[in-house]
Length: 99
Image 1: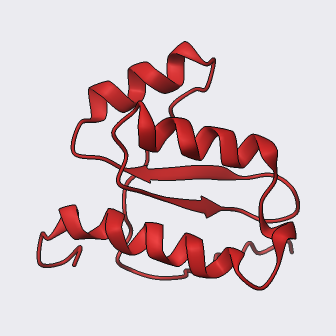
Image 2: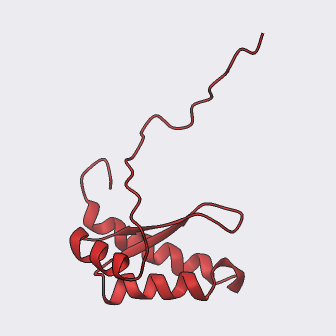
């Protein structure tokens, strides 16, 4: 979808994935994450979300057709925006010679 430019469908898949991911374990999420996700969907106009990161910290990545609306909604709650871009190269191992 990303490569073909069908970004609008990405949010729907992200939302479906989130719902399926939560089914087997309620420990996947918590009240803070759920509140922010609900806010982004209901007031911010997001169509989907992905929790990115591990170990009790990370980011919520949203897909939205209206970035300004979502940004304004999240900033009103004190939630900062972190800009990113996609990397199509995959994992890259960097080696530092310590000799």
